Image (cartoon, rainbow, N blue to C red):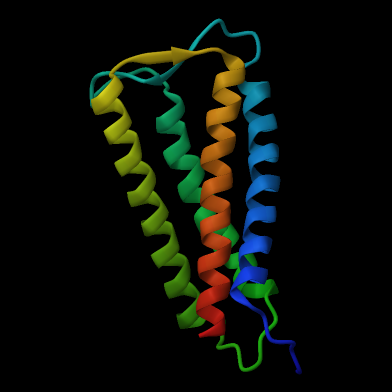
Length: 150
């Protein structure tokens, strides 16, 4: 198979496009979950709580997106001499998933530590969820394709 060389700027443009698409899709999904609610917790000033928070849901969303989108990017990206999915693709999937998990957890804890308990309306929830999803999708897409080109 003959492929055209891909530049870092081309990969970045594709990652941003994918990130924006994922932000919109996941924001819309979140809208149907939160519409009609008066307020939603962004964070709660306690590590152990029973309340659903946007950042807590964002960790699960970003982690699952990382795993799914890494597999999609690995299988659909065309490069010469691409190694089989096992073990190379699996290791990239694990690395991306743990990286995104750690990054979102860290940012969520820092936010909770700085601001404590905060609430927002449904539109704020949609925006924050979209940002988390877009951020995770863009990073994973870029990392996966960059790794395949190395």
